[in-house]
Image (cartoon, rainbow, N blue to C red; front, side):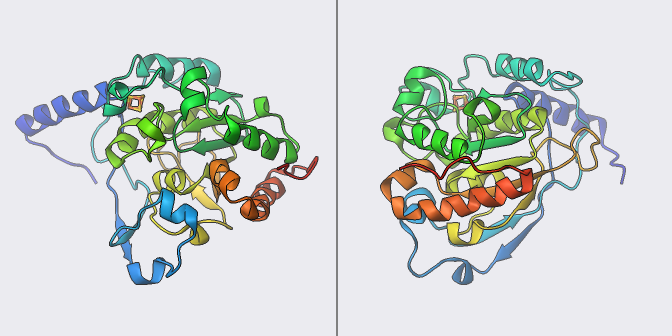
Length: 288
Ligand code: SF4
C-alpha cells in the first residue's frame, strides 16, 4: 500500500531517519505482536539460567518479524551491494567506529569486540556480551567459556575458524552484568548487519539473552530450546533473493554450562540437531 505524506511530515521523517542512520540503524519495521499468557509461559521452578539471564516480564511477547518497510529507506547501508562478505564486514566495522552510541562505552570497556571468524561461515554463534578476557583481547569467547565453546565446535567436527562468533553487545558490561535492554537495542542492529552479510545457514543463540534479542521472544529456555526457528535479521527484506533464509537454534551459554555441567548433555542434543541439519559428523564428544 502506498503512503502519501504531507511534505512537512516527510521532511521531519527524513530528519529522523538521518538521525537513526547515524546510530547505525537503516531500516524501520512495523512489528506485530501477539501476547502469550504469562502464566502458561513461566515455569513454576525456573532453571538457574532463566533466573540469571532472563528476568521474567509480566507479559511475554512474541513479535512477528517485519512485514514491510513502512518508510522509504533514504540512505543505503555502506555495505549494500558489496558482494564480498569480508569487505562488507570491514565496512560495518568502520561504520561502527569508536562507538559511543550506548552507555557501555563509558563504563570501563577497553575495546569494542566486533566478532571473529569465517566471513562466509555456514554456522554462527551469538552470545550475550564480552567478559573480562574478551575485553582485554578484543575477541569474543576467549576465556574459560570460550574454551568450552571451542570444544563444542570441535565436537561438531568443525574448527573455530570455520564458524563466526559474535555477541549481542560489543562492549563489556561492567562486572559482567546482563546487558540492559537499551544497550541491546542500540548495539544489535550492527550484529544484524553482520549476520545479513555472512549469510549463515544456522545461527546458534547461546543463552537466553541472545535468544531473546534475536527472536524477540521472552520465554523460558525449556521452551526456546529443541527446535529450529526461521530467522531473518532485521534489515533484510522478506523475499530478498540475497537472503536464502537461515535457521536459528537456541542452546545454553557455555558460561552457564561451566556453572552447571549436568546440562552439557542437553546442549549436546541441541548441537546434534544443528549438525544433522548441516550434514556434519561428530569428531568427539564435548569435553569437560
Ligand atoms: S555496546 Fe555497541 S552500541 Fe554500545 S558503545 Fe559498544 S559498540 Fe556502541
